[in-house]
Image (cartoon, rainbow, N blue to C red; front, side, top):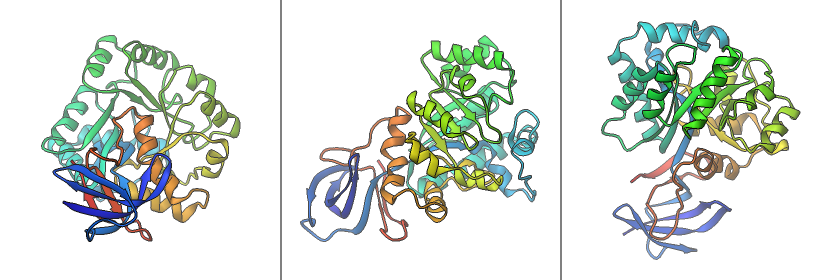
Amino acid sequence: MDYVQGKILTPEGFRTGYLGFENNTIIEAGKGNSPKKPICKGLIVPTFVNAHTHIGDSFIRKKDIALPKDVEELVAPPNGLKHKLLKEASEKEIVDGMKNSIDKMVESGVSVFCDFRENGIKGINQLKKALTNTNLSSIVLSRPVKMEYNKDEINVLLENSNGIGLSSISDWNYSELARIAGHVKKKGKVFAIHASERIREDIDLVLDLKPDLLIHMVKANKSDLEIVKDNDIPIAVCPRSNNFFGLKTDLELFKKVGVKLILGTDNAMINSPNILDEITFIKSKYKCFSVEELLDMVTYTARKALNHDSCILGLNQKADFIVLDEKTLRPLYISVC
């Protein structure tokens, strides 16, 4: 049996101790030092959750293209550069790009990711193909091919994905959005939407859609965030992506209000899907969160917010954990079942 030792992240915070494991199962969990020399020491945390990705555009990273640093010009559907390049790309090009991002997530300790999947059922099938022979769990939030409600298409999408993930109300005819959101809720699936990323949007209109998850909220004010908190809706923030577009997420305000925060890496054409890179960026730009709080956002809080299986580091549980260097947060050991 192997052992790891250090500060173990629990839902209540760090505790000092050790884990003994074999055959992908935690056999011992105790306080203090391990009974025999551990294979490594550090921060012991559950495997990570990347709460917001668009890995379909991964292939664009290999192209020699100067990406515009304007949200609408680059990513807004249906005419953003990303969507034009997706239409021009081959199936192999898109799937190979996805596989590359999936490999990078696995290598960095991500075991679950929530992807906003463009291109309707075709996009869902591309992601499923890319996930073949991997242990990575995906929460797939699909979207219709056209920016309109089609009952039959939404039924097909919901039969093959975890729900629907859309761009903001500023991009859509609101009545079409409302019909899609209502359909999703009737089916008991997840409805998520980008909100107040490049401009402040009417939070009442957003919440009338009854979203389970909001993305970004960069331009939201204190009142908007308080309403979101009162409705207990988690927000996935992606500060590196926002920074690329010259937008600054007011994480100090988010913390002051007390909204439920989880972290994502957003478009793979802009950023690596390594969630630790997001944490490192936040640590370098903000002083309002402790390492413990940031690691909780990508482990326990993220799993709860996305209704994914819990990952408790305790006796007879799966040995799904990572050991991080306490100073650099560099992974020293990754154990994934």
